[in-house]
Amino acid sequence: TRFTSNAALMNFYPFEMIADISPRPVLFIAGEQAHSRYFSEEAYSRAAEPKELYIVKGAGHVDLYDRRELIPFDKLEDFFGKM
Image (cartoon, rainbow, N blue to C red):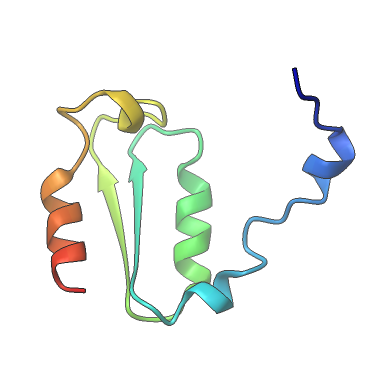
């Protein structure tokens, strides 16, 4: 079993590298009802163009891991097909 201290979690800043990631094309996908949706919205607001935020209607956070009918495969194919 591995343990992570609270200090390590408190020092994690999810937007620290956003300037390094974008201006490459970025696609943010979030569930409409996801508790983590605000992270995607905040990252989107901080990212440079080109960027896109895609909200999956009726989906929560975990739904996008294992509910295949909610995973937007067509959106992913379209995004990565342009690369």
